[in-house]
Amino acid sequence: MLRAVPSLILSMSASEIIGSWSYNMTFTLLETIIILLFVLTIGIALSIRLTMTTYVTLSSFFLTEIALMRFLFEALTNVFAPMGLLIAACFVVLILTLLLVPKNPKWKDITHEVATRLAVLTYIYIFIDIVGVIIVIVRLV
Image (cartoon, rainbow, N blue to C red):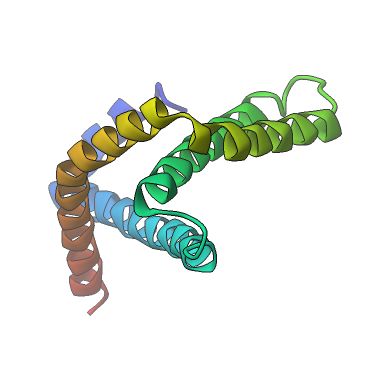
């Protein structure tokens, strides 16, 4: 399918390409909002026991691990692999992260620095997503 994308783009008009891009950005924004609400809900539930630095560190590690797990699940669907074992291994990694990361201040500092530096890219990405939503709304009206 990826080999057919350039020829597909050549057969589309500029407005069709922008429309297709806008629908992708709108879906990405909705997906990001759902993940953000999930992480914030966990943060509110655990806010009594965690400081802000620990919360940012744990949520960064959890989101990275969940993204890697999703990639592994998609990569191993074509290969014979016991899914129960893979799911158990993922839970073990998440539990080890929960136990080990808060005790290491160096990991806290590194993830906090990365999170603050990625904030600028997040603002740019949200702006692009909102432009995509506006284009979808204009196309629907």
